[in-house]
Image (cartoon, rainbow, N blue to C red; front, side):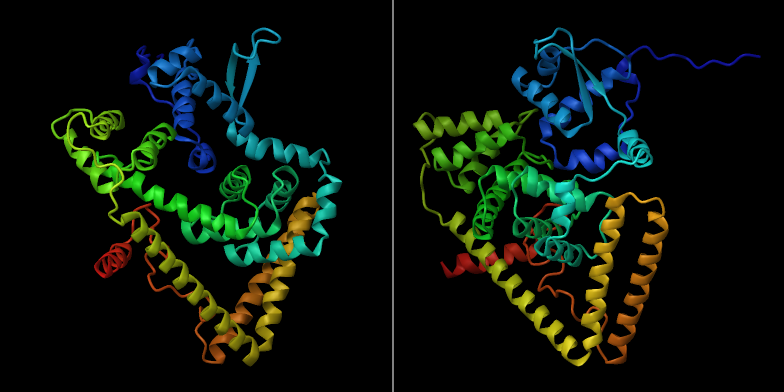
Length: 423
């Protein structure tokens, strides 16, 4: 008796396998259009079907240039390989999708056996006191020890991106507190963006974040009014920026334009753009350019309040730590020992020594014992175990105004309402 499965010839009735590593490590930090290009082409790659960039652009309603940029991005991320058809022709090539599990695990294991070593320039940085302090602070912020090659990759941000340790520590703090995310690939994307924006000091970064956070709120509000729960694409952001920056419309007026999509089967940003252009030039309803409703200023005031709340709570947490250190000096010693062990683990990981796993396991066990001792000392002296941790006025958003889902927290509306009443 023989068995065979019916072959489904229609590509749209079959399934495309997407590796979880792509979803967790790459999708979260990639531009939306680039993800669309990757997934769309992956569907055709599974069936070895011909598909060129022009056709992809047409199917995805994108410019040909943006598709080319997407492939350059994925090549830089190291998850596809270009095979050029003719030498010197940079626009004609085949795309090979690399196996991400092999990249993450298989090849790394082989390289260790082959005696791969860390570049000398990174080893020299490892011995710098500033770098040691940076590592200790990052481990305190994330509440975990470093994973794999994370220490070496952090150092590469300094050498490759020209980032400074202060910026890197702030990036980890920002990602953990506001994004609830401490994955180093995610943090790397944030650091690279700040460097590309020409930001160097913490003050510059905070000003930039305040501006982008306010604008992100406006993007989300418009998309929600159109019935979308996704983030805006780069092109949609560019169009919406013209409404607020060039035409001077307030968010309330933009939402009025969104109401014009009632009854339309496929509401979209381009339709809203045409409505607002008509209003701005006086063709249609009366222009609402440049009215002062104070909304943007109110939002900025709310974000300033959150900054003050976080500063207050951070100072209170620091006072509690000082109190514990004064009453139980051994706690400070335990935390210092834990940080030092974390650095030792990082060095062992970077060295690639044969008995590294055994040494790391022993050091992690020592960390567990130190944590148990710390918990015992805290409770014996009538302190709660989390007494030194950061306390939040609003646990839902951790005093940021934004929940993990990306939506505004209920406390944001309350603060905004209070400010507008005062105005």
